[in-house]
Amino acid sequence: MKKKSTLFLLFIFLFGCEANSNISSKSTSKEKPEYLQTDAHAALDRPYSQAVKVGNMLYLSGVIGRKPGETQLAAGGIVPETRQALENVKNTLEMNGSSMENVVKCLCMLSDISDYDAMNAEYKKFFPKDRRPARSTFAVSLPIGAKIEIECFATLK
Image (cartoon, rainbow, N blue to C red; front, side, top):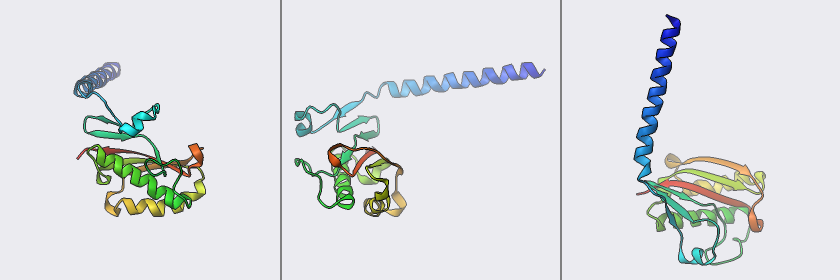
């Protein structure tokens, strides 16, 4: 009896997984990615898009604290770089039909984890207390001496 009930439960589980798999693959197969970038970004021939839109989601590539069109990072360290990186995120979101209010997940990469508290103080200014996205933060080696790189996922308006 125990063997039959175990087989029955296994059948139900496998059938349920297959049914769910078919439903999700059917609903997402029509949602082709749209690769988004400004003309300025395209002219640089970087190996990534600034954002990718799939269905109701917008996935942003990581941004650093450099003003658009400039080669230098925002002067002054982690706080101004965090502020500029988040302004860059905000601009990219708005250019592509979203906003900071629609951000659901961020990934913050710091070149020095001891900058965590200072980064958080500036980061909080961009996300109201009741609308803070999920987030991961860790230390990595970043390009051009940047102190922070931020990547975000957001829903469309």
